[in-house]
Length: 157
Image 1 (cartoon, helix red, strand yellow):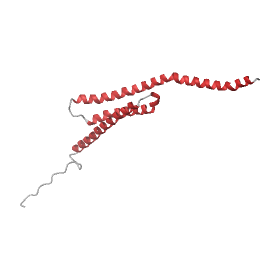
Image 2 (tube, rainbow, N blue to C red):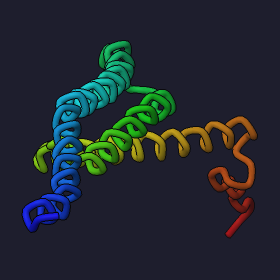
Image 3 (cartoon, rainbow, N blue to C red):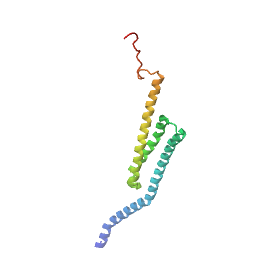
Image 4 (tube, helix red, strand yellow):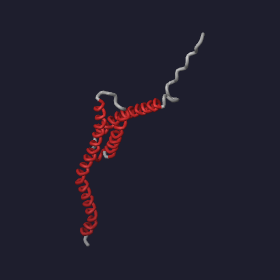
């Protein structure tokens, strides 16, 4: 065996490894657009769910025709919006690099989510207080009702 033949045999496995790595990278690059498309599809589905939840809240507001809103209904309608926004934020943060999600998009959604949670918390707190007041009124004031008027003394002072 000559020196050239020996050198070729020594390099052959290395060439095969480089070729295999090249093929693997090529396969990943070929599927990257499909995965990026998957990101877009996933985010679009989440965005559609978010839009549906927002439309549910908007329908309640529109149905009120300027009258006070029922806080219990608003509280109930806000729960799906909070859920889907949390899911969107989680997905975007988890796949930020892979899906090439801009930091600004995540920050904007987080800001909207904070407002949604604040709105929901206020509505649910008011709904809970309203419910307690109704229960107390149904019991006739009960122990938690307003204080009873004391009779005034009669007779000369």
